[in-house]
Image 1 (cartoon, rainbow, N blue to C red):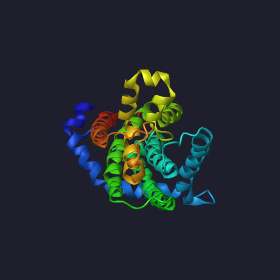
Image 2: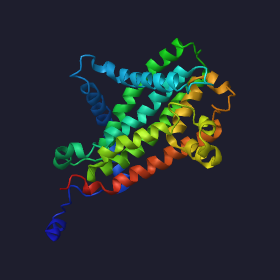
Image 3: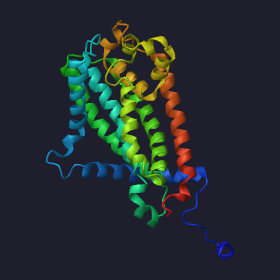
Length: 296
């Protein structure tokens, strides 16, 4: 059969094309990816009475729970003047990564009939799911700005830095979503494990409390400085911290050692490095399994 196909110029429909050609095919489908994402987002809450309001209400409710438990009861807000916008910014930004990974885990495995019936670059699926979360984030950012203003934080030129922060985080999310999508395509257990991984990641990323405060609260962290160094290099912390520094001038100006704002220059280096390495590596790793997606 292989000789017959070669003699008549037939090729395998699911064969992996060269990388350059594959990238062009994905780019040619950019309008489909965005339209698919818009349709998916609109259909997500059609059965709910509040509909699209849940896009913003969910992270707000999460922030409210964290504020009551960690801010009021455990008093982890000490040293942060604008703790409410500080917390909300962290929750909204981290949720972008969290939801991108959660939904992308089923991007290929949840569309097996489509994958088996049509020949298209499979990378469009995790890209579309990440685009859904980007659209939700853009809506959430409008609410975030209103909440920050309502909390008495004055607009600042540094708010413009939120644009490159989100773009770098988007590249990072796309690359990591590709990794999770490939894992989810062949190992369905990843969807069960992922919530525990993401919850742990949230706690060590300083979303709820300042990472620097651990040096005062934990003898283990205080005696092992490398733990804080690793936590500050963690991409979850990097993008959240840069967003906070952009949105909240009082946070940048504070001098409390238990809050200890991380070095902005070093954070930008981390942000660019994580975005490029994970995006390129994740895309290539997903591409390498292109011809295996959808097989029994």
